[in-house]
Image (cartoon, rainbow, N blue to C red; front, side, top):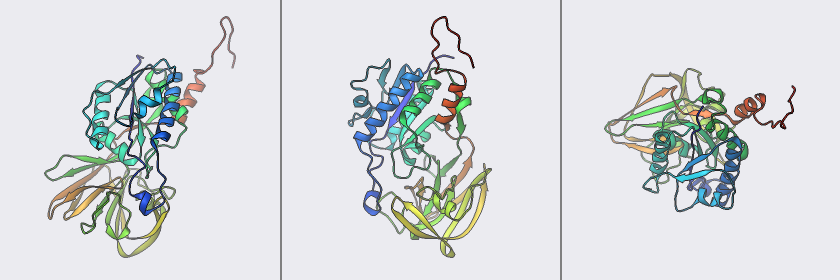
Length: 335
């Protein structure tokens, strides 16, 4: 198999939103992100990667991470005009696709991963957590993640061997461009405004979940705390409001609040749900689309989302194939 580039999309804004003020979320600094990238790059080179394409920017995350490293890597910035918005991540993912990237490291939280998937829906993604709500990204030592990425980029492992397709919620807002969510979509009361983060239970009308996990923060924890698994063949729909079961949910790091849930149901893959304005559609924990009175949003869960690389699976397959073993000239390696 021919070698292909590794893409790197590192979001300098991840881990720095309002939840540092209203809760106790930690700040993910640029220094920390550069350290993560250095370890990833070292692993990627050791795994066999030769070319790296990265999203450049004034924070110089990748450039500074590469500084002083003596690695056999050719690193080139993606040719993009920056907007200092989520559009940069979306455009970078699309540019990685056009350049034939075998795998893309996305450094950020749920919102960063969503923006990348909006630019390349079935992106071969290796998502590492540096955000606030990190339901979709992985918690993994960057060196190990880099090794996995390098093995795939070098053609030593196939994507089919190490990646699993994730579902998405496709969002069609009447009269506007399409969008998607990787974890959850929520219908939020239009009376509330301000910060993009969704963290007040009173503003929630309904939530559509692709994840239901009691051990995460954010809206995905609502279904988890109720003991409701996400259906294997679709999404979990929750109707929220007073008069229902109250679940105590970690909506943000250091913020546990009661959330009233009136009803729940399943929404099968490829079947649509309609929400009508006025209101706001929040995607993966952030307010994204304001619906005018009568304006319609159609939400459809699909199976065809990002192909998520599992570093453990990649390293286990590589080890089983002896890819890390160096046999001296003239010697034989025995099982």
